[in-house]
Image (cartoon, each protein chain N blue to C red):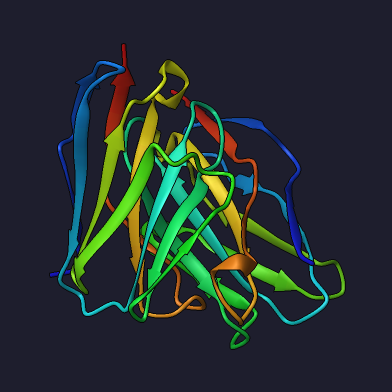
Length: 114
Length: 112
């Protein structure tokens, strides 16, 4: 069985400062890992994904994440927050074998203070 | 075309009404999904239509019924809903489970 834990339900940063959203996973097998962003009353948008290639993954809008197997982590970072980054972020783990193996984290709400 | 299109964007319905939500994708994805999302919660999987086979989350009540007319369309028929069914309903598609999902912008459903 797999699980995913987003360690912070709410993160607040000042505009122009770095962003760190933390995600830990548990999986018996090599997972695929994803970060999605959801702006208010919108659908989810894929930011980036790790599928066993390079451990440092670059995504859209300046976000990146590093897969650390030893720490079972897949934290999302951005060097400089922008007001438009304020949204809900979901970490998702997926194992091969079907939709039953897709697990969403509980989400982290990012607030950006001007 | 890299979008999943959902209609309508908003829907208000009474508990005795019958309505349908529509979802369409033209990316050639072989799997389509319906998710339900309550406020401040992650999406919950309701149905999957993958490679012409429908799979159901057994916790979903029978007042929700999916229909897949073809590989590009996935409808969700609603009948005799309850106020607790009010939520954001998201459609998604994927080429493969390891590629991630493309989500639609959702239908905001309110049951009165």
